[in-house]
Image (cartoon, rainbow, N blue to C red):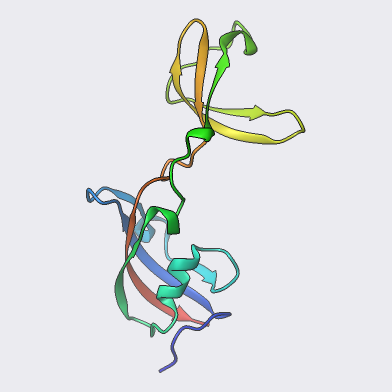
Amino acid sequence: MATARMGDTITISYIGTLDDGTIFHSTEAEGPLTATLGAGEIFPALEAAIVGMRPTETRNIFLCAGEAYGERLKENVIRVARGSFPAEKEIKPGQKLGIEFSGGAARVMLVTEVSEEAVTLDGNHPLAGCNLTFALRLDLIR
């Protein structure tokens, strides 16, 4: 039976959990994920763990934060004067805002704090700083 190699297109099913057991994603609702190993479609460390697997094989694969979405970076959290936003715009914690920076760069950021003077925005990925575990089954190699 063939084993997964870089360049293969694979289909996987998985349940992804955090250290406390919280499920952050599962293919159960959306169906299996198809990706090409080595094409940058999934984390490189996850690809490396899949290489050598056979169809129907299962593994628990642990990725430390640095191998997944990276560590939380303080420089990705900024405070912006409340006056930088239109006065009529309601801004509240938990809201996501598209922010344009000088030079044309744009980024979606999470509002974490709002006061009369400032709005605190977090540009880190929600899973940055989190270790991830995948209960993974290799369904198919093409």
